Amino acid sequence: MNKDYASTRRKFLQQLSASAAMLAASPFASVANPEQLEERIIRYQRPISANDTIRIGLIGTGIMGHQDLQTALKIPGIELAGACDLYTGRLDRMKELYGSSLYTTQDYRELLNKKDIDAVIIATSDHWHARIATDAFRKNKHVYCEKPMVHKIREGLPLIGAQRLSKKVLQVGSQRVSSIAYIKAKELYKAGEIGALNCVEATYDRQSAIGAWEYTMPTDASAQTVDWRRYISGMPPIPFDPKKFFWWRNYKAFGTGMAGDLFVHLLSGIHMITDSKGPNRIVSSGQLSYWKDGRDVPDVMTSILDYPATKDHPAFQVMLRVNFISGGGNKSVIRLYGTEGVIEMEGNSFTVTHSMLPKAPGIGGYDALNTYPTAMQEELKRQYYTRWTKDDEKRPEKAPVKYKMHDGYSDHLDHFTNFFDAIRTGTMANEGPEFAFRAAAPCLAANDSYFQKRIIFWDPINMRLKGA
Image (cartoon, rainbow, N blue to C red; front, side, top):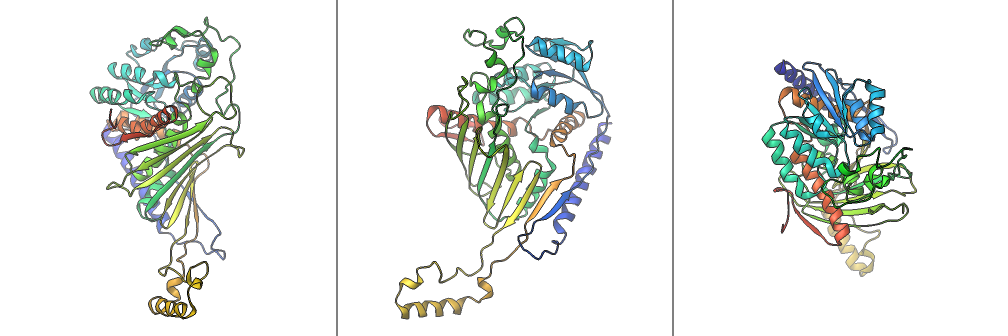
């Protein structure tokens, strides 16, 4: 059965590759205006087979927990076997949605002890990710863990070791890594469509209270409805604070702020397209500009990351920005700048534009030429036109093209499909532990740079802080 499933998946990828090749080879539409944008729809069929039934448990039933579960259950052969949350109201909601007989608990260890659970989704606050994932591997469960993979850089290598020892699948939830749009963008990038990469700009902006993590509070939030003691396990005693539980992303003791929540999405996509292992130097700046609600993380943050040259890519710079009071609305863009063009990613679509240099460097115009004596100008022009022709002065042109997925496409569904494929076929998931940690660690280092006001040096190959 597993061999049949693997065969089906290989055929699908071959079909996708053939389709992408046809798209790349097709001629540009005739356009009178070279700036007119041609649009190409990337179409494909997703083969999803039920094969073996996989029973899952959900640990953390907040926003992403609900979204992850709803997506996972769209895949044939996936069954919900239990749910865990520290807030009783969310466990009541799970029973409303999935039946009064659903097994629920406030202790994730009880869920991991259930023999009928094959895999778990971890969608808790960040500070529990590594602990729960490690325990899950020890109980021989496969793990889908929300990003970032870890709360602290020091947790990364031990968690990788736990996954390797268990030989179970780990998928981390940056779904762009499985996006067909990103696969197509990577194909074009690798084919040299924009020349040699030198710079990446990536932004994730928001303009709303909910977007800034001020989520709706339940009416009964209290130490009686929330297992606060378990939530802060391993920390010094902290009085119950509903914000630190329901708005945990705003506090560095429980979350990872803008960098761990949103930078990591951007870096995951950049690493996927470029095959990069990561930067070796990170520096950040930021401020708390608007959302002064008790949070101890910034609401505007920028980071610059140096990526050294490797066998897979030239040296390039990455500039990251998140702004929770952007004034321009909600928008996330990744722009990859090369010597001959730009790929601009936005959601599950992207645009390719070009600006290529002519063979000749040019002479005259905004140039030093006219500052020289007349006779010298004439001699310089004579030398120039002896070497270069008029055609050499013309810029090569390519029409811009927009690629987009067909309506209804979901990279989230593809990411979960890949996770369950990996379980059924015994293969690695798209965002396994090494890839996920190499995306998360520079983001956590960006936080360290911001709070410590210093440059952080990182070894992306050995996945260690330099000097540590």
